[in-house]
Length: 279
Image (tube, rainbow, N blue to C red; front, side):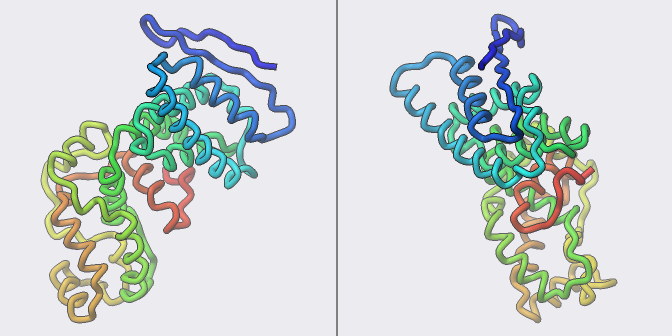
């Protein structure tokens, strides 16, 4: 049985809260129905052709949501999907995807939504995630990849793995975030305007990426020495990371909480980091 409750969300606008009984635990069919209800009741009426495109985009969103839902099913708290705050996030996601399609970074949105809906999600992560869900659709892939590049430079660690092992792992990681190579200063300023990064004030020249610091071969070495060692030993991915950091203004900015969460989320397939334990 569906109940619809009006919820004032702004001037001349009405949000629809949908409540559906989830008495048997997580059920993707129920959650899919809530998503569609929220979208259909809140998305402005558009021309038929545009409406068809919007519907197709939302279907793509629902496919990704189902994948993320099934992956996290054991930890998802189904009751959270009847909470007005989470339904507001669902409504916003659906509308953003209908407008921008794949450019909304659909996979990241559904992964983050399911993270927020998990039983053990701390309140701080819920708050940071709520802000991140607003920002992710407004970032292009190169902006997301740039945040991941900053994570590699200042937050990631690989313990005492050898330089050869780090180089091997970096190869596939740098391919995944390859769009960061096209970032220009205007892009970085835009990402800063969205609150994901902040200017350092004084640039951090000679920044040694955190992911390299614990490698035995690099212990006590300066950046130029690491470059020379990497060049002499054909560690091309390590060299590429250092060049990207210098080229893409990473030394001039630092990650904020939102940027850190988004950057790590984008690297989730390459790491064992639990987003819920980042802060």
